[in-house]
Image (cartoon, rainbow, N blue to C red; front, side, top):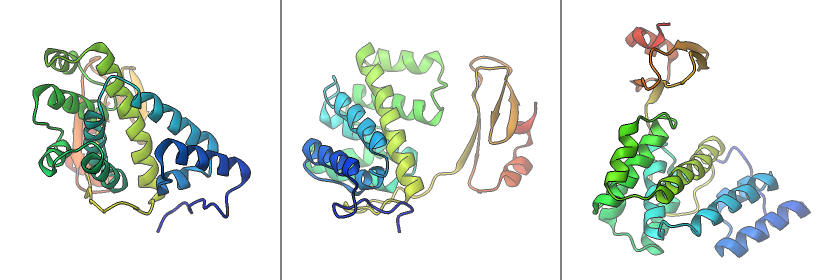
Length: 232
């Protein structure tokens, strides 16, 4: 059951109804994601604006859907994985093999594979990547415009992934389960000190990234198993 009730045509306030009408015009349908977002018309219009702008960018529909699939899998968002698996196959013409590869951040051509790898790296490292990640995607042939748009797609999909994961939006597409992902504790801040998950980290170098991955939802478990992550 959704943690946020869906705004229906019958229950929508005038500003919510106007936002949902914009969704119908832009998408041809009104997915449950947008009905949950419609509690805040400002959020819904912002989402539509970013999505619509990126749709007019340099990346084709196939690449955009593969990016959405890869990021949804990375963030364990079953709603978005279900939606973009459906759209990827029915609208962008992706094969089942291409969808499966995208879930792993891979593709059947080198440039698209590099774009997906870059997107997943940006997502999982919270944007704190080193120069080699940019060098690799550029070496594969990506332009600065394409790199910029990939970062934009990461942001767009983080918005929808996080929103659906929190809201537990009822899936209105053929269901594809993203499963679960482990907790990941990152020391990635470029500042000398910063707060993450109520823990203070001290950074030794600007580019240092130290992931600690746990399959347990317990901070105490992480501290016991990986005390080095909590050293100042």
